[in-house]
Length: 359
Image 1 (cartoon, helix red, strand yellow):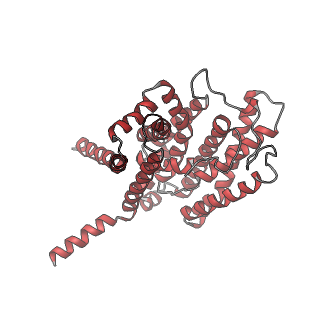
Image 2 (cartoon, rainbow, N blue to C red):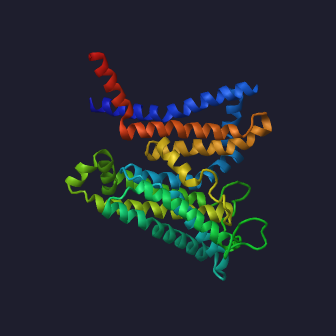
Image 3 (cartoon, one colour):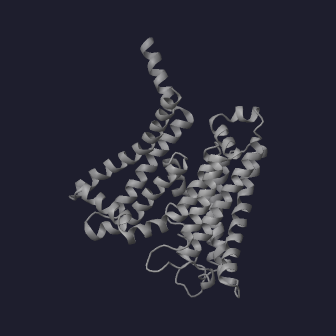
């Protein structure tokens, strides 16, 4: 009986993850058909060129590297009902400072220089996360609001720094100077992947182990299912909030430094992309239902969309914006699903319908 219930639960979670994607692809297919192209052929090109072609696959893995980290960092908090929206700000701040250290610190060997960049990035991300962490843990201030506000505050601060004191005077746009070669992660051989992917995978595995196999992971699950019960049974939720927010910030700092040293090599106003690596990680975490295996599948799928779009224009007349539309629709459907799970809108609606019928 328990196995049946467990299988049913997994089936529901899988359905809830797949349904937003299917709906987004169906609507995308309608748009592609209206343009006059074949939706199935377009999707085939998008997937095969990003997952079943060696160059496309290595590029997909490179794109996925920071997303593995931002997704698992989000899940560590969200699974415990801690709605930390600050991953984006922590990643960007950490990446910015890694770039500054990568450029201005000289005379170090390759390994020490990289380690210093990662260390500074992690430290900055953790310090930035301290404000919402302490407010949430000790004053019960809504971390969602605080982290959202701080994200935009950090964006403005970094805009000021990158266009002022740290501006690359030789660039024709707002940018910081590029990092030194000793701090860079170069692509391996003829592939489109850098050694940072191995760091990302290792950190992801460690975080997944914490979620699945440790006492902290058990506490995360208990807090997510029933925070009041978890606190009443002595699971020390205040300390857990601090640990999870700090651990999440550490992972965000690693993602920011790795992305700076392997992909961008200097800071620009669109450093994290649109909507941003932190926000993409949140989408992937929700799509993967906060399960490590689900996150891996969702991350590879999402990264394949990002890399596949580069091939669509070469083989079809479908505009690249179709992927942005699909991504936006997935976000919309997941947001509706998330709000329903948190506030129970559909259940309340069903109860009202049942009450109306009885009346």
